[in-house]
Length: 470
Image: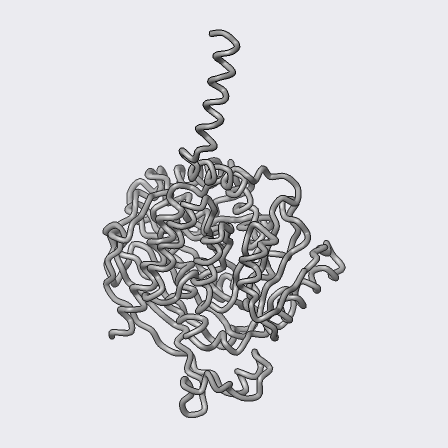
């Protein structure tokens, strides 16, 4: 082929590309491949930060994230409290951060962010009534979204979120929620053990009375965060803005059912069959409300939920359902404050044909999450123990060196976990952020992640609908 013909072909190819054939794919590929892991290439925008989780993302620095963060929010205590938390990270004596917050607090804060787009990733953690709209508009503008849970709190808004995932794919941006509990070492051990057929034997089908998987969480309105007493915004206690417990914290619990019981499976809405759902209130006195909000009386928008001079918050919920034929139960309970030395606590059990893998975090465990393995057989225990020891001390220890199996009785063992893996809830936000940065560099999420997020929020919002009917 002569040089003239090669030149002509090159020109024709260039003209064809400019003509628009496959232009949409080219734009998507360009967006998805723009992150390389280079220093400071991620420009973070924080939108309307009303929840302390927004600040925990910035408790540490990341080479890939530019130190300048653009905050767009309405004026008020929410944004002021957020900036105060960032300032405390910057001024702490040990490992201070170096964030520079560029703040815009005009009434058009959302439109300003979408129009100016000073960053390429939006982080949102705040008023959940607005969050689904924020997510929708951000992905429509071609902005990657890193969202605190829950991304939706009503059945009516679920289709909006579902469409947002489709739009994100079309625009070539990532939409991802922050599932910190996947990074807790005890849940990792539970999941890894359940993946080993010779140890776990596969999930039982379970019943509503004895589900195959149980995930229970107890939270406290009054607690310490980053070394200080947590001040909560008044709207946090309005379930129309924060969401009821059955669609809020249960997001984590439903996620653990999916992630732990069906690792890397692609799940769909049709895999979910609700059995029952219920909701109930936690009642707060004016003194308790003042302690956590610093407000001396209930605001007008909360008075609809006040009876007998107590604020009744539908913060508690329980869902019993089948996922791919296996019965699961998730429940969340909110107390005003926990026992001395306790914070939020977690209980979980995965029932297998050969053993149950249990996580407890009660008084006996010093309120520290602890893994137990309960054998479900009476014969062959010596062989079982050998396989269990290998799984803990060799297989899982390949990734987490130092794990040790401790025998407690003929059919009961626990796992000794080195302190270096016990990072705590706040540190998990940094781990999720590092993971998200890798996904940005990869230009994609795991293929199961989006369908499973959709399935997760379908489960919680449909359960909300069912609970209100009962």
